Image (cartoon, rainbow, N blue to C red; front, top):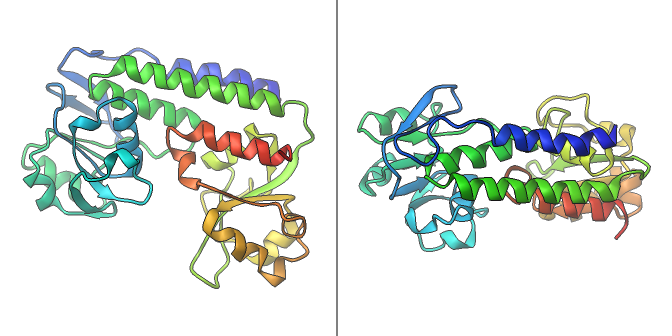
Length: 290
């Protein structure tokens, strides 16, 4: 089974590098998170990124010089420091975005009404599907590469990520599966949220040679301390800020991961970014006791 997972990375790359509609010749047509075609009439020169993922990919594609605005986020790449803020990613200012005269906005959503407001004044908006797998990360890189006229750079990034994932996975092959959980912090005093079986975090646990003890759940439900105790993970991955909280929770003292000090802090945002291979490296090293 683990061998099949390693081989499956090749299919991820093949899917991410599948046929394009127009390549780098503009106009370019890409498909957004609604399944609708978005026409990019010419190579974007003024880009606003609403979301750290988009900002990071723009940087990785070598187009940071075209970023004129970013949403506030502690996960933004350092290269975005000093670029004009358009507000919080969950509530960006349409007025500020319009004032920056962008020819492409990445990440505006329907639920907040931002996409419709921006499109009504003639601004091209592109949002990509929710990331629930490594393949989704690669596909997003591909889509943004096409939209920015940087398809070749995108292909190189995709190949590099996939190659690194294969190399890291190979180190975990043959190891005894470890019971694991990926927990996210809740408000102080409340139980954490667990990554369910349909999350990218669960896929990464599997690729790292672990078994997600919450694989039977969907999404990121809040789980009780009793359920963590009952599933008894041998290792827990969580945000750096949550490590001491989990280790200091008296009720979890008998959980294997807590008892053995195997609550590992990671940069969880890397799971849904082009840094996904780096996160997998951290997870494999922790599981192998390095």
